[in-house]
View: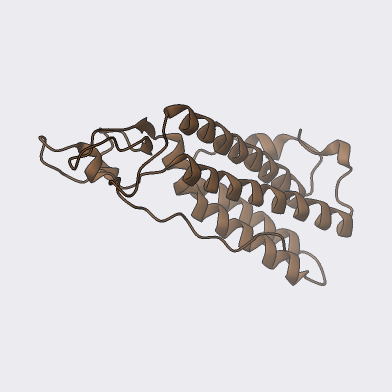
Length: 203
């Protein structure tokens, strides 16, 4: 198993001792890297789904691609994995265990991907003086991610997350780690059961 142990970054409010990035470019670059890694990982999951469905047809991949929620996607992935391993005389418990761990990691990571995808790069002048630096935070209209604060206050003080560029890269590297695990499992399971040729996998 190549999926490493992982914890999210500590969520600390901007303060004179906890400042964000010096400019917005660092935030934008980190966002681009992390979201690109996530989409590569999603492409890997499509191939894994195709393998678990045991079909060279792209029909299963196209059907999977119509799903918008991670809950629906992981439901289809789990069902296909259970059918794939349960339909064999000797269930490969180790691969099945690793695949289930991957799906659990995918569910956990989804919220951080969403925070990154729907965040904005902002900074402000600290009440104590000086500039906060730049963080990725939820927009002001995000009711679920902004606590009610007096309109005279800085709305970001009620934000549910404040990511620096390093924080965002931390999540991006996790997505990259998940991609590596997806590809390892595809290669190992396909090598053991000879389901598909390399040329038959979804691009």
